[in-house]
Length: 331
Image (cartoon, rainbow, N blue to C red; front, side):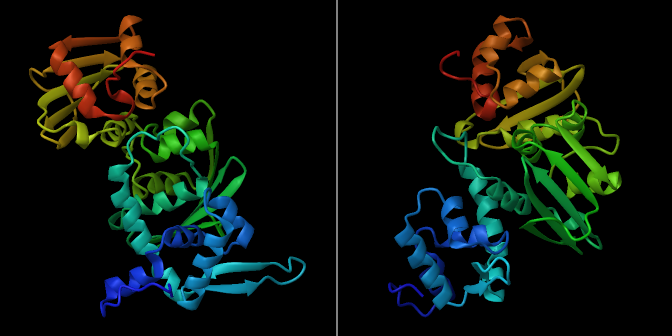
């Protein structure tokens, strides 16, 4: 336990005595994926000093959250892993990830991103109501790194390494994986050009998309991916006081957005008299959604068409946030 204490006889205070120190809960986050050597933890936590990491591990060991184990020969390495008490922090970390997504916004220059953190985020996207009675595993090979997700009757656990008996195996690069996981691409849009391959039980693969929170309808239509894109890029902090309707017509498919003072409702189909209508093709829509294209550039080049009040269009674009947000300067 930390040498500092809140000195309060309260479960929350006692928990923070153990994991409330800077870096402590991030050490737990990384160990949720499986046992790690000291050097693995240090490499996976950019910015942590060796003295701080040693102190956090010592505190977690003393509290019974983490234990040390010697791997059998020929490895002869010592690893840190979570105890059953430490494993009980999994839903705590999951809820923190889910809550923290509201604060992320666009990544500022210099911020680190690790595949393992994305794996933990998969648990935060989990929809247990769709996994009742299911017992299957999904294996992912992303840029040479391997991890798997185990589904067991409405529960989820993501870990590094191969699955014992995977229902399917996905092979992809991290950019494509991130685009699918963040709902900016549907799996079909990633598989078609060969950026992602899927082998094994294709029905299990389709189930996993719904279970892990990536929307796609039963026919594999890309509209689900479009709805996910606009939901994912909504910036509530930019939508205070904004009220209006925005309709996208993407390759002839219509989706609509209703803004009501920091709230967003997204649906399929046309609506009567939208304040702003944006017409474009799927490639341009996805490029803007991922930040690879700028709306002003697309408009100037004739790849999008905007109908409606220009001032309202800028307000709604700013509220939409993410890659679709209006920037203060063109690229």
